[in-house]
Image (cartoon, rainbow, N blue to C red):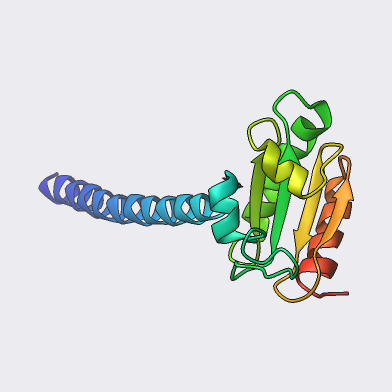
Length: 160
């Protein structure tokens, strides 16, 4: 009986020790996933941040000079816009899916009217695709995820 009790106690202790290691491992994975997701968020910009991180059109009005270190999508949107609301979660998914490869920015056209005017934004959503090298391209309207992924792969990442 003592041997059976000792064996049961040993099994309990081993399970408890292994279980805590699994919990630590799961917590570590969860923390790493949260950090990756946080690094892959859509970033809302105002004019000053746009000039610093994307393109300073006041300093270089005649020549496109991208200020970023990764290709980017800039979403010109408004809170009241239905199609803008439709693509917002898709852009968040793309930011997470392409984390470390691209950056997704958002510009609220109601709050940043001067910035919107500088880019001739007349309808929303308007997406500005900015490759690391080369000329940016604009697209208007809500695009399905497959079309957005194709644009990211071809225009931003240079994949065919």
